[in-house]
Amino acid sequence: MTDDTVPGRLGLIGCGQLGGAIAGALLRAGVVPPLRLTICTRSGPAGPMAEVAGIVWTADPQAVAQGCDTLLLALPPMAGRALRLAAGGRLVISVMAGVTLAQLATISGSPRRVRAMSNPAAQSGMAYSPFYAPGLSDADRAVTRAVFDACGLTDEVPEESQMDVFTAVTGPVPGFVAYVAQCMQEYAQSQGVAPDTARRAVAQLFRAAGTLMADSERPPAAFVQEMLDYAGTTAAGLAAMQAAGLPAAVAQGLEAARQRCLTIGAPED
Ligand SMILES: NC(=O)C1=CN([C@@H]2O[C@H](COP(=O)(O)OP(=O)(O)OC[C@H]3O[C@@H](n4cnc5c(N)ncnc54)[C@H](OP(=O)(O)O)[C@@H]3O)[C@@H](O)[C@H]2O)C=CC1
Ligand SMILES: O=C(O)[C@@H]1CCC=N1
Image (cartoon, rainbow, N blue to C red; front, side):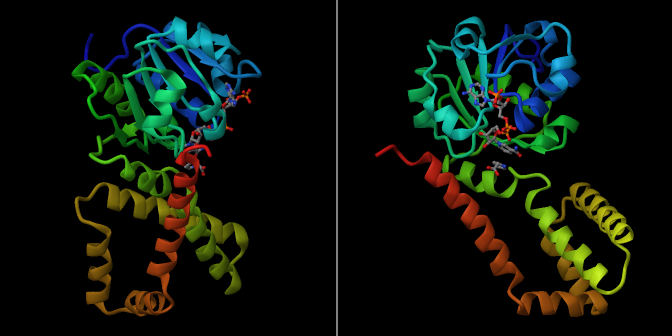
């Protein structure tokens, strides 16, 4: 097996916003051909994957668990928590928000478990997909990396608690960033800018800002400090945003999302 493919058959349970995006990424990157992909949903072929010849569709999660070598769980967290798969010793990878590695053991019974997080930007290879998988074999780690390399960037994290952090921070795309963009567009419109002009302008701003920061090793704080040092119009705005509590507001929002993850992952009463 080269280190950029998934051996045997991949079984995907859930093919919605995230599962569909990951499936698209895997096919686009050639990590899994359609003929080695089984997808499980309750209502049959869904989204762009429905048009791909060769994919096997099923409504039976057990068929996936027993007929595939690697399982990828991308269904809603509470539906996932209710699953009980006779997965034997198969590799089980989950991208379900908040579902813990311990819950994956209850769901699948497999000792080969990966708790991961990704986002729908996987479709275009632009996702960030961290994973937590203590004790994973080198071969399973290579398969996990092949899956998430196809989706964008990936890192293995040392603590499971970080998976809730990343579910909050990088799980939603455009997510919280869209909220900031909305605030900026609404400000421009409040100053008389036509809605579509404001929308285009803010979209271009976020395209440029995202590219600039993604192509740089510099942390965002360095860009902010550069503008503060420049002491121009932006510096005045940054000072006002800081005085208005923007950092605390962002932290409170992300913490609320992380807390929701902990609720999902809490043991049943
Ligand atoms: N959307 C996002 O931006 C992100 C989502 N996630 C996580 O990804 C997972 C999937 O979310 P998302 O793709 O948004 O959800 P969607 O609602 O878009 O898709 C859910 C998919 O799961 C299928 N499904 C639901 N219940 C079952 C079941 N019992 N058995 C088999 N298939 C089932 C649905 O098909 P059908 O109804 O036909 O069964 C559908 O294909 C979640 O755990 C979420 O936390 C993580 C990060 C980002
Ligand atoms: O909002 C959600 O629940 C999903 C998980 C992370 C991003 N979107």
